[in-house]
Image 1 (cartoon, one colour):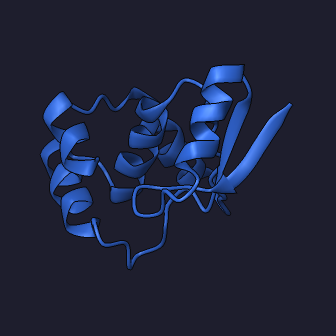
Image 2 (spheres, rainbow, N blue to C red):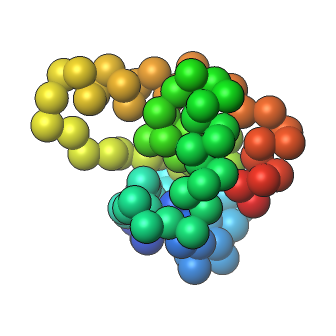
Length: 103
């Protein structure tokens, strides 16, 4: 069983649904997990990405993975290179301060 709702760094209107999924052990698939280039926290994503030598996309995915153990982001891709870039986000560890900045 899983739930899919709009959820990303900039769009968290489904926070209550995520909490219910956490409580009941249900997978949560964030729809539009990267939030687009106009996200209000884009500057923070860029700064954190630069500090890690990562991409903004990797930071956004890393934040989702750190946000909850029930989140399963499925970003779209059209190339192996982009797939590999997305996959590398799983190895990116954000600091507590960086997570707080994105909170």
